[in-house]
Length: 239
Image (cartoon, rainbow, N blue to C red; front, side):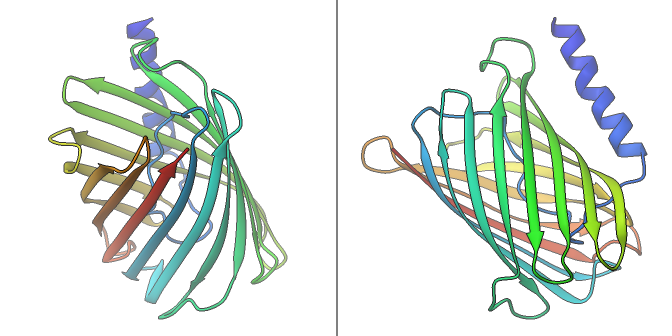
């Protein structure tokens, strides 16, 4: 099973990474999901993505997400987001998103831990609707952790019509300390390739509660890609 699982991870990366890649919101740099669901857990989440340059954000672009989620079973969690996005500032609600996350395998059951996500997003700007399916694979090598998110996206727009897209995000992380885990991330989308450093950390609070954070900057690898994309995530987990 170990060799088979590893082959699946590399196959996903190859197929999605070499195919025609895209992401509807124009900012492919975002959270890289792990496959795990913690029973009875609830979370409040804030995410910020900001880009400048390239085809994605020639005049600058910002996306903010405010979310609340909860596990409804040992392996399924639901989350809802309010989204504000635009140029320079984001002071109004522009979209909402619903997300269902499924932990397919138990942690450590196989050589690779598997999960899946289904997302639905409705934009108030241009009546754009988006349905995405995401396969998550995570593998540990001692203190190193590799995570892959491979997505297939269906977008329906009154102006651009209907289309299918794909996206890929990869993260290699070193578990130095709980409060400080350096990582390197790679993102691929239509007209976009980017790589950059990210710092990840978590702090234990009272009881089993915790505060997780991620911050990093991804740099475009070609002229079409945004010059830089900054991302920030704050996540408060409680029971």
